[in-house]
Length: 182
Image 1 (cartoon, rainbow, N blue to C red):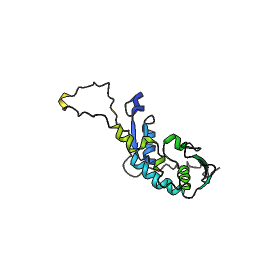
Image 2 (image 1 turned 90 degrees about the horizontal axis):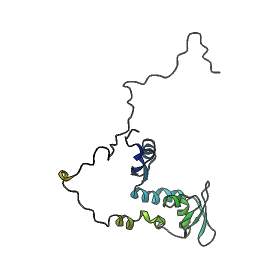
Image 3 (image 1 turned 180 degrees about the vertical axis):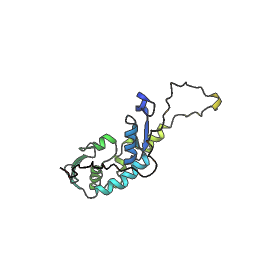
Image 4 (image 1 turned 45 degrees about the vertical axis):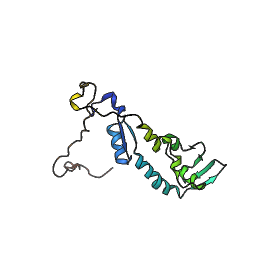
């Protein structure tokens, strides 16, 4: 392991907007680490990207709670009362998928943030910090846990590119060699 953590890599957590470069980097360098959304980016994504994409979709009411959403590829059956979508994204992440947004629009619901899991609410965030957080003592009063308790996480090792123009990888044919492709 490049980070020197061994079995403890699953204890790492990365919080980001989960853009493709970041997600790829985290999954490549720290495959066992937990990678989650930043709440600010999460709500921005729901209000812009998913809403715009779901505007083209067709929502057809089935019953009072069931709505079939046709998106052209992966149709979804949404139950707003039970907070279930057949695509599974809503249950898995707690974040409304495009099917849910289209179904909510059918019923005239403009603010789909009410369908986000309670784990992402301001109340849950505030209750996380309701307990007292004691200040740290002066640095001179800190105890040293020892070298084997806290692992040292080194940055990933990147191979350095050789200076100058990259060498050509084309192979030069030998004398008398047939160069036609077969």
